Length: 280
Image (cartoon, rainbow, N blue to C red; front, top):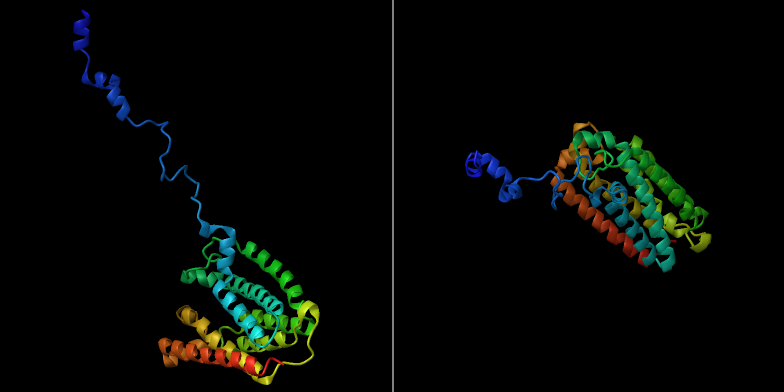
């Protein structure tokens, strides 16, 4: 057969297979992945929110921790404590509040998962309970010397307040006495400040009754405000805390307004009393 006939006898498929244009448009198995591809299967993309420090911070209830520590340290400063003592108070309370946050999420991890509550990395499986327990234990080993750095009486008062809060988280939060740990622990904060001193040098003068009562009332208001977002899951699980009992009678919006005003008034009165009367 002549070369001309052989050329004419080729099929279109053969021609396209050898065409440079067809080869260019055919997908290549060895082509490198483009930007935005998911990448190899099984490899998760990096997310800052899923890193261990961020997850631990989220489980520590950082807003409550910072606000509580800032409030106690501000009270100490207004009452005339030096800046370094107020800073020590801030760090001590901040670590203690982080312990309470981790403990709360560890105790509630089954309930949080059942109700699919947001911002709960332990319940969602993003943070291992063992890792949270290890971090909590390290924080406990840190908060003891931090507390005692203010003096034995001051440190003892704060550690007792922390123990009361941890106990209440397990045994009283679902009852009408849910307010008791908050009132008692907050009521010990003035003793922590009044007996405190720098480098373990304590003061011998106890806190005033006015400051102690106002601090306890502040704990009551904070308890109600903190409990309001979780009233629906609490009601489903039959955890009849004091805020839930009040909300069933007044309605959640009205209780929020009352608790916010009450807490604000008590907080201002606490600062005014600390300025006028001092803590001891």
